[in-house]
Amino acid sequence: MIVALLQFYVNSNDVQYEEEERAMGDYVNGMWKDSTGNGNPVNFKGKWGEHIFTEEEIRALLNGEEICFGYKGRDIRGHIQYCSYNGKEYIGFKPDFDKAYDKKPVFRGSTFRLDMRKEDIMAEFMRRNYYARLRNDDRTEIAYRRIVDQQEQRAGVDVEYTRNGRTCLVDEKAQMDYIFNDAPLPTFALEIMGVKGAEGWFVKDGLKTQYYMFIWPHAEGDSLTVDSIRYAMYAFVEKKALQDAVEKRYGTKEELTECARRIMAGKIGYEKGNRVYYKEKPFDAEGYLVYTKKPVSGQEGKAEEPVNLVVSRRWIESLAEEYGTVRP
Image 1: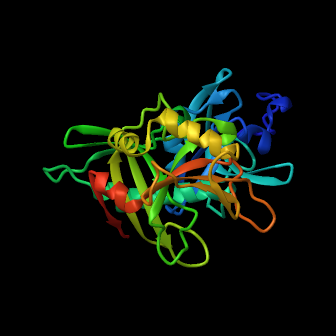
Image 2: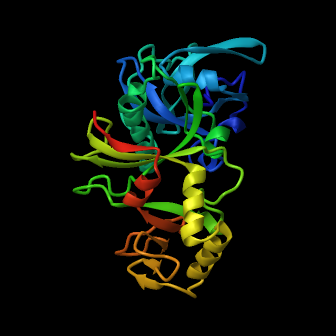
């Protein structure tokens, strides 16, 4: 984060916070180990002044360590902690010469959107209870890496791990909207069309994803934490195998995209609540299209107005290399 007190380094015009910079997509999401040793979901600016944090530096910061980097002729040393600017508190980078530098920073609460917090909590749950338990055939630990680089994340990779010599690039997809239901939903939504009619992640070309990790978590209590998640059903599916199965049963990505455009235009489907459903052939009880509109008074919705191919969990499991239930 840019620190306004460094007037001899950083021009005050460089100091930007909140919505404007969040819209630029240059924030890092992850689990931060504070001075107590606890891991907590945080969101912080991916650069300080003109210095953009490297992936190695981000890993160190999230691990509660100090980093040191060269900046305009001198070394800057510091870590992430709570910062304050114009009365707003946030997690950000603080150099050790700043008067507000906290030698033992402690997490005090989430400072970013709930959906991002849910995503990182789920990632930490899977790290502790799934990836940490994976072993090679010789019982040695696997090589595991949680992706923090935003370009890699946008390319469809959340996790990279190597097991028995095979490296897998994994995109984690968790069903988080109904996590406090009595039981997880028996379906999963594959995005065909996203924000402003853009290609959804399931049909988008150029992504590096090799496997999907579909997750159906169940939590109990008043708030979502890693420890409040009681279990998570999962299915580990090769991306190509799923796409081939969808094409064979429901049509090519071009055909699915065309159907998505028509349902958004009101030419096909039937409306129920704030959603439009299309279940005519080739769609069936195992898979159909749903267009979710923006939220309106008294009705839930999605701001991005996606069109999803909703498929049954049972069908996904039939295509999976591995599926089961993860428990703490």
